[in-house]
Image 1: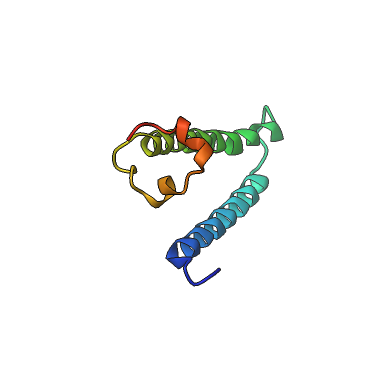
Image 2: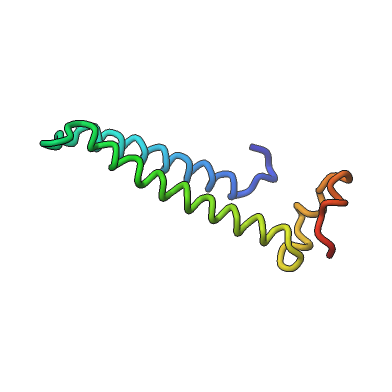
Length: 96
């Protein structure tokens, strides 16, 4: 990290480490669950896939809201990211 990176990079790495620790813990807990009487080990897949599907849907919704709010003029119209867009992207940019 360079001098200008600031706290954002540290927070991002910290959140990434927390997510990895939680994921490893969840996989360990799911692996130690006893088998279900009728379905056996196959039933355990619900404990992993349902939370992952919910997380994926929330991430998609956040990405949708962020992309629409970033590409529309208004709050993010004068941010540093908009000023760094390449010249070829200017015909595709919304009018400001």
